[in-house]
Image (tube, rainbow over all chains, first blue to last red):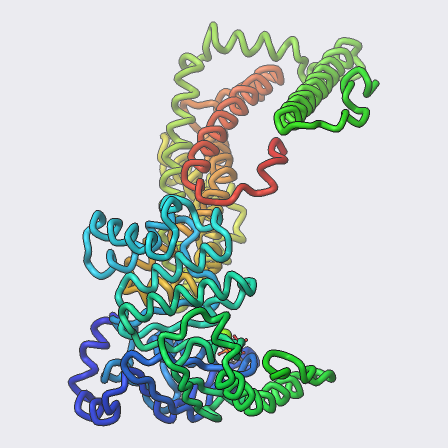
Length: 299
Length: 294
Ligand SMILES: Nc1ncnc2c1ncn2[C@@H]1O[C@H](COP(=O)(O)OP(=O)(O)OP(=O)(O)O)[C@@H](O)[C@H]1O
Ligand SMILES: [Mg+2]
């Protein structure tokens, strides 16, 4: 059903799409998404969002909670349709799930009733590989993310960090040209997060998909990305775009953050983000404004 | 008292190696199980013995309430002499066949409808009121209709059992589909899964937890359906044995048949539990499993 939609789509809009995309992998143009609330009103999650991610570019998105970051990703993935505006992936208008896009969800999305290798093997199997082939690939990918020896474990038998590794293998095994990551390491402790970030960079540099990476952690965003997008408090829209001109390969993320240029960028971006975080807090009726010394405030 | 049963009740000497810690834990566990079983035995003797004594002393009339020794005798009679309409084994066979057929039809129907309605909002809204009404009818009454319509043969019993089973399984399957994590569905869709893949890999396994939980109750219901159906009119079966005994004012035989039914149901329960363990082996061990037996 979805496949048919995405195949049919280019006929009508391919020419326009190519013109609009201008060679960019991901393009959002004036995208608005509204939801019907349980009380029947319309709630605007994101408003007039426009952004572009070039092939092989690593783009991080930061913004206060509830500003519509996850919503933006589900639109790029084709899981939801925009209320207004258009979304292009690989030069084609997104009208359903797109082949070539992988998604690492904010919450755990491994199937708890399947072993780790069966989970990772799902992608190739849905794309027509034989079971044997798919399992072979899955084992190979599990080895690459450092999960050898855990192939036949069930997700609940793994630690949180190991589950994220498995999810990463499941996302990368389809060799996506677009990789969407929604706070993939949000629930991990600082050390594990640093290790996982390094591994992500290592794997990303091998195949260079375009990445849209959502995070709450400004340091993580700057350490990983080529470009950081700051979103406003809900309804979210793009407030600022910062190019991160730190040279690659950057080495361990733990070390990058002490470079003077890193601190400079962090200071700039935090200045922009701070107001939005405060606005978001105020909107939630929270009497206590966030302490000035939250992430990056110290810089 | 405790010191007899649990001599290690005093703080055990600081165990200095893992082995002794493990063995103490094992020992303690064994003792706990022994104590539970002992208490069960005492309770059983108390109930049966009390019943026997009260009826022997005519505080309670054995004519109405039976008597354990009489029930044992009736049970032996059933197995040795059989009934007026064949051996007791053939009665068990007939009832089991009706219950099993009803169980299978009810379960399959419940799963198919539950999953279909759980996924389609349109179907659910259309069928909703009808199902609510059907569910509000005391379903045992349907037994009378089925016996009138389909006669004294097995069909009417199978139907009644199937209807009873259907609703239990249906509501669980329906709820199971409703509770499926959207994230898991989205994940499979993004990975390239079709609608069939989503059903097979996410919705069915997820709903299976709910469906299997309902099977325990459902099997009991299928036996009830078969027995009640026979009670309302049949040529064979355990329900007929009960209704015949009732007409002869023979409570001992009624109780004896109850014992047989209970034994069958417990055996089926055991088989279902085995299947449950196999199918749901992926689940983390739950707290409720360690307090099994209730
Ligand atoms: N299906 C939906 N129906 C109604 N409202 C929704 C739906 N999905 C999201 N929203 C609303 O849209 C807003 C943005 O949600 P979203 O999940 O995109 O935020 P977010 O930026 O990812 O937040 P966080 O950083 O906390 O994950 C929220 O206010 C949320 O309540
Ligand atoms: Mg989110």
